[in-house]
Each structure stands twice: as C-alpha cells, then as structure tokens.
Amino acid sequence: MTSETCRPAQDVLNEPSSSNVIKELVSSSTLEAKKLMAQAKEAARVQKVWESLSAYVDRGWPLHIISLLDKEEALISKLRAENHSAISTLEEVYRAAKQQAEALMRRHFPAYLEQACNVAGLPLDLDSRHPRYYFEKHFLELFVDERKGFARLSDYEGRLDEFPADIGAIVEAVKREHKRLFKRPFDGKKFLKKLRQQYLAIAKKENIPDGSSIPIRHITRRLSKNQRGFRTDEFLIDLSKLIEQGPTEIEGFRLDLQHTKDTGEGMLLYGPAGRGYIGFVTFRRVGNG
Image 1 (cartoon, rainbow, N blue to C red):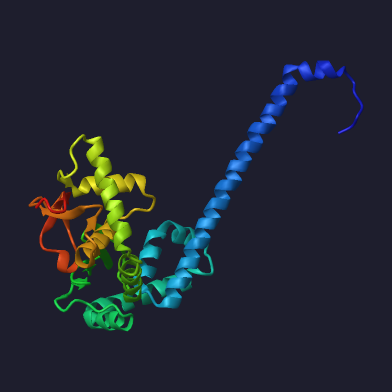
Image 2: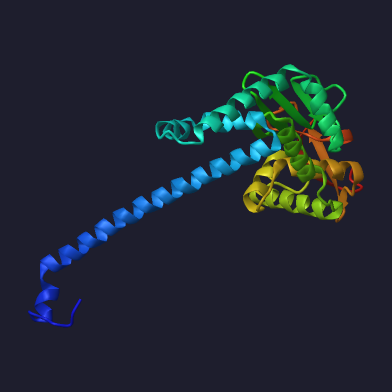
C-alpha cells in the first residue's frame, strides 16, 4: 500500500466496484475461516478419540475399545485408505479386545463383578442374579446385556447411565451414583422447611387450603423448575431419610404422606420408609387429628 493517489479519495470511496471488491474479500475470508474452524473442530474430535482409546487400552477395558472403534469406522477406513502406519496396530488392538471381551462375558463375569464391587465397598444385594444386579436394597439396578456388551444403571426414578460393560467402568459408575445419592450431607430441618415452602406455594397457586393433599410429583416438578441442579432421586432419598430420622413437625404442622396405587405418579421411598408408593403430601395441624 502507498500514500500516492491517482484519483480523488471521495471518488474511490464512492465507487461501487471498490465496495464490491472488499465485500468479496470479506466473503472469501469468511469461507476460509469457517473451513479452518471446521478442520480444527474435526482435528480436536479425532484427538479425543485417540485419547479415549489410549485410556481404554491402559485401563484394560476391551468393551470400550470395541465400542469406540466400531463407532469410528469411517475414521478407521480413512486411515486404511491412506495406508496409515497405525492401521495394523489398531486392527491388532481390536482383535485382542474382541477375544478378551468374549472371554469376559463367557467366563465368571458375576464372580469378577462381585469381587470388584466388594473391593470398592459396594456389595451386591444377595439376590443379585446375572444379568440383573442390585445395590442398596434394590435402589440401584444394573442390567448387563451380553449380546450388545453394554451395561445399564438405573434407580427408582429411571435410567442413570448406559455404557460398555467393562467391570472397571461398572464399578466407577456405581460408585459415582452411590456417592451422589447416599454420601450427601442431610439436614432434616432444612429439608422439611423446603418441603413446607413448596407445599404452601402450590396450595396458594392452586387456591386450596393448607392441609389439602397435594400430589408429590407437583412438588418435584416445581423444584425441578426453580432449583438449579435438582435431581428427583436425591429428593426421594432425602424424603426417605426425613421419614426415618425426622423431624416431621414444623410450625405447628405435621408432615403426612399418603399412598397411591398409581405407580407412575407415585414415588417409592428407600429403605424402611418404602412401604408402598407415596402419591400425596399434606401438613396437618398438630392436635387436630
């Protein structure tokens, strides 16, 4: 660029062709930037694939290896077409993972799983039978699909996770969910106060008197909208602890839970509190029966 000018500046700036040329530069550079960003995004994704594969190999998780490489078939095919030096190693790893996975599923899977869970301090319920395993009085259920090589972890409120059924991965998942559910601090007074506040807010909105029965799912739905990070199964565990440990009285009112036959709208509490599905919550004034 030079400071010399052949034509008046105003003429150059007002000329449509100048504007068009610059707009073309903007357009072409935008396309180039998008192309490079897409390439960078794909490169980052591929990097994560290889990082995950490396981690699975190091941890000895054959089912995760198989699942990942099956999912990335297009990437493997691309490397094969390029005659990449890593292809022979990847194929070897895949074959070894297949053999190890078949052996895992065919031989002593229940015994290996029980041993690993005991070491992790997560004993199986005594009535666990392959392919269904239970923890914490059936609150957590693990189903192992041998055909697909996947494990599904659920609790009373539904599915929590699904992943390749390597025993180490199963133990990690159960440990994570067990800690989330059962190792949280519990303050009975604080929880009862929150329950009472939700109850009163719903009663006011629905224009019904204090002491009326309110569906328990109305309370959990309101909490899910208003409380960040709310999890229904954590609420269920806390409510179970409240019924078992107390307190159940607040400001002259006593908490009362009423049962329902509608298992879809009810909640089955955990442990000693779990005597049928709870459908409704009410607070009765103490001394009024």
